[in-house]
Image (cartoon, rainbow, N blue to C red; front, side, top):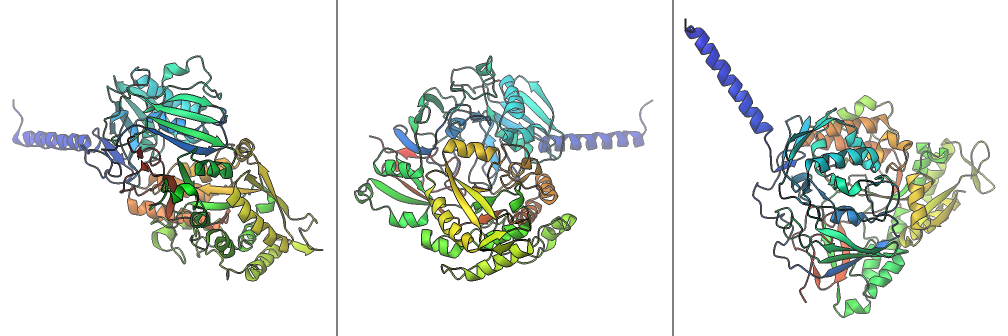
Length: 606
């Protein structure tokens, strides 16, 4: 007996419904050429090149860059040792490539496609069949899986947080693999798309976690050609580089050789630039940019000065206080240290007053906190932690200002009141606590850090007027790195660049685990439930509007926490360079950032 009309109609409806669901799932989680943190990638599937490159740039020549310090390892993927950062960028490649003209979008590099469902609970990558390491061997799924696991378990701490969120990793095809995640975190597919991929066989019989001067094999445009630890390292373009003609690589990596010369300090490096030993100099000081570039090579036109604009957040630069030390555990003491810092006078003395002050971690961008009390969605995100928030997070926090004169009497008076409230008093010209211990600490700086030394010298004189002794300790680059990694300092120079799409790296900078775990970038020793909770929330946000509100809330908590004595920032990057070196007129929104110099520069043909 056949089906009744009702049953036939019901079967048809079920079939149509199932087909629609399957079709929708196919559309929503089909393999894609790219991925954006929010919305869709800006570039179409068959784009020619990134919009900020010159696809017709000539290839050839050499560029020589300068670095401060030295290196004793060629493994940039671990905490141990000091490795040239450029080895990570020039020799190794990732599954996806970042377009630095969008807040956070990736396009296929080693991977020809990426697939992830709407909730991003898993991600699947499919490798390009033509992808090759520099020795000619293919990049395989086994290499990718080994790289993910090895970096996540033995690599630098920055790799471990994301790996801990992986529930399962499996090969799903001859050229594809899938990662399934334990927790909701919409950034994870992009993070793994940017993990460096290494050749598994290259590390057989070697301890990955140990520093080594054996060059590693990558699939990138360059190979390590020559080096002498502490003096130089040279990268030469691989003539057989497999990815040369991909859209994400057109107009990039134009030099035949990229060489880095190492110097003991910034003064020596700048003199080397003036003498023609290195080709490019990034000038961090606006005053010097106006004052110190009248040397002969500039006058002859052999060196030109370029200013590269950007639209990224100010980030944070200043002196960070280590709150693991009881001296800086009280927010009133930290606020007093900020009040005593005569920013307007220092900025005028060193920069001619040109540079604006950093007013919050994400100032100069849409992500930065707004003035006044927290309102609307930002307030709603802060209320769950209102009892533990630092003063000013909800009500509004503003940095102190001064008249710009040398004495800063008003700021010092405010500082004295705060210190008295925190239990400090002056006795015979020395600030002491209730037990009679003097307020004495060490500012750790790297040798040759002339700008921060100049700031510290002025600051120390002002602190002495409060009865505080600040001793400036200058150490070499190796000691400086070691002491930062182990948090062995009272106060030190601090610089944190921040992107237009903050994500999991915020844990490395501010997560509570970093208070005790060595090697993170949580130099202040921050351990805040509010900060941890807001980072969790920003990783789970599904809309751009919700994401902005969460970052603004996080910005309020960080700023009101008074962890850093803020300096200034620049709305442009100042680069002096040889006249035969060029970059495209259309610069990315991130400006002089990762992927800019030397990646998209070129040299005039001989």
